[in-house]
Length: 144
Image (cartoon, rainbow, N blue to C red):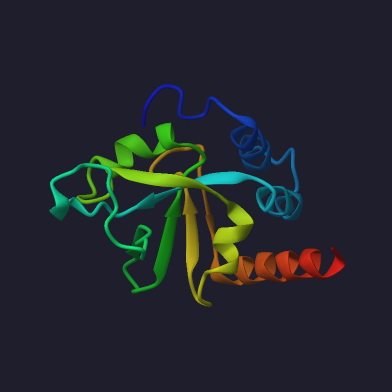
């Protein structure tokens, strides 16, 4: 763990820290998360010889499996938070900022989400909570 792991560097991290410290209800944090942007690592297509140029129209997000074989989508509160983690993951040196709600809408059932894995200012979101968030997104879209 690095010094500064628990230092909030943006609005999303301030809310995450409040949730970790019990100052923000987890349900309120989840609703707030749906309004935020997160950094999603995307696999690089390096065969072109031109770094940073994506040749495919199919983005491959970073998904890992736990010991039980459960799939976990890896997200970060900022590109800076991803650097140390991605240094150990071949092919994932880049990514994009995306609305968290947009990501949740595109997830298959059964996935967990790890936000800022490997640092104290992080959290895991279990599959049932991901599905609850999807229901919130759908309800919000219906009311618009």
